[in-house]
Structures are given as structure tokens and as C-alpha cells.
Length: 130
Image 1 (cartoon, rainbow, N blue to C red):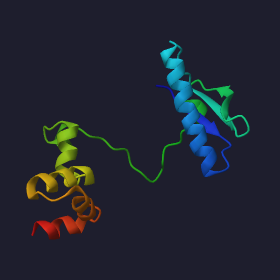
Image 2 (tube, rainbow, N blue to C red):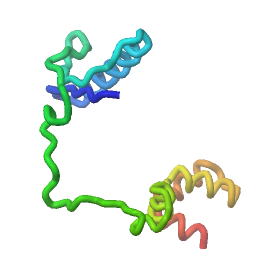
Image 3 (spheres, rainbow, N blue to C red):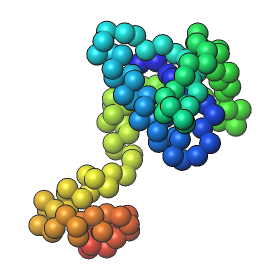
């Protein structure tokens, strides 16, 4: 999909309302066969709707600027060691809390509330398994 930017949000409530409205608006438009265009919108808190401010043609309009302190990330076959990107990342990234919760429940037969408490603190997982 295309990026829709909503500007001039002045409170958490307006952020929530604008996101909810945009989700419904874009879903309705897609179901009606309409395209979602890259654009900037504003939120009107009185009516609870977003209003188009301007269309955006591409990334140039968003003024993306590379971060000068971050070198480019180049992943080639030497770095990936013959693995797919998913395999490479799963070997190096820690287990997600949701996965750990399911694993603890299945492996140790503990309840979901207990597993959620344990997995809320990564060191607690190791301590429990020792």
C-alpha cells in the first residue's frame, strides 16, 4: 500500500481517532475498488475525519535523508554464510516473548499467566529453565 501521512495531531486521543478513521476509510476505499494514494492529510477533531491536504509523488516529496552516522548495511553471501535472511536473523535474534511463552507452556506444562510473567523478564526465562 501507499503511505498516508496524517499531520497536526495535538493529543494522544487525536492520534487514536485519526488512526481508527484512516483504517476504516482505507478499508472502505479498497473494498469499493478505489486506490489508496500517497498523500498528506490532517485530522479534524470536530468531525472526526481526516482531510486531504496534498498528494505526494514519491520519496523525494517526503524529504528522506540518509542518517550520516549509520554506514550502509550490505548483506552479501559472505555475511549471510549461505543462509536466507530469515535463517540468518533467527540464528542471531533472541526468542520473541510470545514464542517463549508458548514454548514454556508446552515444555514445562505451566499456565499461560505464569509463562507470561516469566517471559516478561528475559533473564527470568534462563533462571526458570535452570
